[in-house]
Length: 449
Image 1 (spheres, one colour):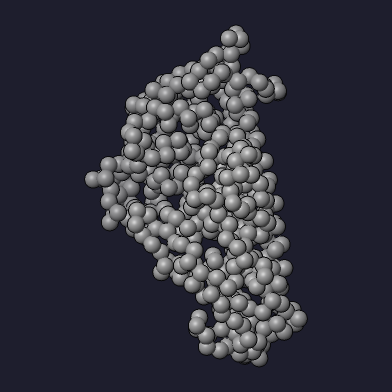
Image 2: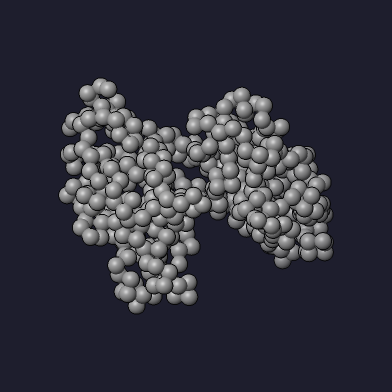
């Protein structure tokens, strides 16, 4: 082996790096801490307003999600002070996806963590916590920690396993911080893009609700008013009367058709998982259909070869197809722009265009009424699922073509904006995922200031 490199649990790394057990880099005694046992905290202890407590579901890609966190009262916060988080802590999943981790930032200082998590608190005179959080994000590290987890059915790690893990790091804290700074600036940009996308998506959904759920333009005209924020030409597309239908009151002249009459084609795979490789064309699963963005995530952990892509799938997705999850977590939906991916058996592609516009159907499927109608048709055995024949029976509101096309013009620019931010995030993620391995292997070095 080249003297410039050392063979480690994570592959060949630069021989310049130091190695220590995690416990030797942590604050004494509280360095690696398990969350409170179930007997210490129950669901009935949760309150509407208080201190958030995070669990595995809130561990994103090195970031803690603030969505749907439970809260505990001040007296429980004091009682459970041993399990408080501080800026710079790192939280791991203790069970299941043991390679999930997230860095605690200033906004989560003082929060609590649940018994399904482990907290790492380092001695910052020995190692930079931000650098360490990205070290934990290395694919080689994730593979290693999965390999040493215990339990065949439900993998788990404990304080002993995590404490004994070897950590490789530059001797200079300054160099660690420089690496951390580059990576976290990259991630902050990605996070800003995600927030922008969420705003754009909320705007599109608000227009859909106004036009096709609340019928605000029609109601305004019924009251002799000009529809708010709408030019005269667009307003002329809407009638001045609501009439009864299978869906309740709808605008006069609009139609109602079963789903099977408006869909052009179903797009799926062969009903089983294709051969998986490490590098290749992304395989999109349910978890890659995000709730706060219009497009699927393509930085997936499962991929297929070009030959598999060509031969395994009966039909490939096309631009403007709509994706929907049909097994497990039902009803997650994404819009297709880039077609260089394939879909797993728990994701169904839907193709429209002859009777209804794809963008209109995308937001129709995301809307509460369609989601409610799907829930009423679910088949529950081991896990929930919905079949095509049941989707076929759901009634769809079909506005005139000119109304649909006008809607598509408005949301099209919002979708384009989201897609642009998504594409930038893919580049940022690629940079993040390749930069640190190259720095640690010695393939590249940061310039000395």
